[in-house]
Length: 328
Length: 176
Image (cartoon, rainbow over all chains, first blue to last red; front, side, top):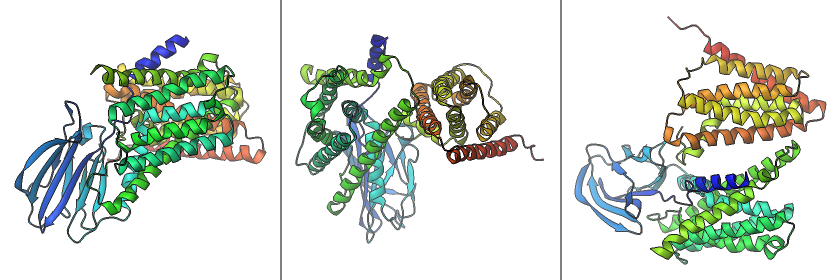
C-alpha cells in the first residue's frame, strides 16, 4: 500500500509545476495627446508561446507597425497607435486570455493622470481604460499577484508542509515560519532590484533539492532520531528561505513600473505571499488538530503520507530539474 | 467557475461560491458533530468519497439531471435534524452524508463540463469539503456547554429556513 501511494504521488507529481507564473505585460503610454506607445510582453518558454493579443477599439489607427523582438524570456512587441478622442473610456481586451491560466498586467499612463495598474485574468480578460485611476490599484494588484503566486507554487507550499512536519513545539513553529519569511523577503527584494541574479533552471533545481532535503529529516523524526535540522529547524528554514525568495521574484513582474511605485509593488506582493503562506499554515494546523479531536484512527501509512509526499515529490522534481542541467 | 489559478482552485472556488454545496456540508457537519465523535468519523470519511463518486457518475454517465428541489430538500432535512438534535444511531449521519454527498456530487458532475480538467477540479471540490466538514465536525463535537450546543442548533435552524426558502423557490409555479 505504501509503495502504491508513492507511485501515485510520483505520477501526480508530473502534473504539478513549480512557480511557472509570469504574467503577460501591456504598457500603454500617452506620448502626446491621443498618441500612444504600446509595449506588449508575452512570456515564452523555449519554443512554446502563449497565443495572446491586444484588442483596442476598432477606430484606433496604427501609426508605426508592431516590431517584435525576443528579450528576457519573452516576446516583446512595440508599436504606436493614435485615436481621435483618446483611449480614456474605451474598452481594451486581451484576446486569448480566457483560455489560459496566465494573468496580464496592464499599465496605462495617460498625460496629466496618475498611472493605472490593473491585473487581468482569464475570468476578466477585458477592462475599460479609466479617465481617473482608482485609489490603491497597485496595492490590490500586487497583493493578489502574491497570493496567486504562493497558491500556484506547489513546491513552496510543500517545503512549508515539510517544516510543519518536523516542528512540534508551538514557539519553535513561530520561530521557523518567521525565519523563512524574513529570509525569502530579503532575497525577494534583492532579486527584484537585480542585486542577485540566478538562472531559472538551476534555481528551480535547488528549490527542489531543498524539498528533497526535508524528506529524510521527516523520516528521522518518525524514528525518534536527532539532527541539526530537527534541533534548529529555524536555521534551515532561513537558509532555504533565501533560495525560495529568489523563486518568488520570478512571479513579480515589475517591468515598466515606475521606480517610485516599485517599493509599494514589492511590499504588497510580499504581503500577498505571506497571506497565502499563513493561510496554508493555519489550515494545515486546523486540519491536524481536527483529526486529533475526532480521534480518527488511521493506518500508519496514512499518517506518513504527507512525509512521503514531501520526500517523493522533492526527489521527482530534483531529477526532473537536474536532468536538463546535466544532459542539455 | 474559472478562478484564473488552475483547475484545482477552480474546484475550490466552485465549492465556496455554490451556496447549496457549502450549506449542505456545513449542516451535515453540524449534525455529525452534535451526534458525537464516532458519528463524525463516519461522516468525514463517507461524505468526500460519496461526493467524488457522484461527480464521476454525473460527468461520465448518462445519468439524468436531478430535479433542483432535491438540493433545498436536503438542506431543509439536515437543518431540521441539527435544530432538533435528536438522539440518533451513530451510523445515521454517515449514511445521510453518503446519500446527500452522492446527489450533490452528481449535480457537480453535470456542471463540470471541461473533461480535461475534471479530475483536478473534483479534487479541489472534495478537498474543500473535507476541510470544512472536518473542522466543523471537530469544533461542534467539542461543544460541551448547553449554550454552545444551542448556538449550533440555532445555526441548524437557519440552515433549515434557507433550505425551506430554496425548496419553495424551486417548486414555485411557472409564470403566465
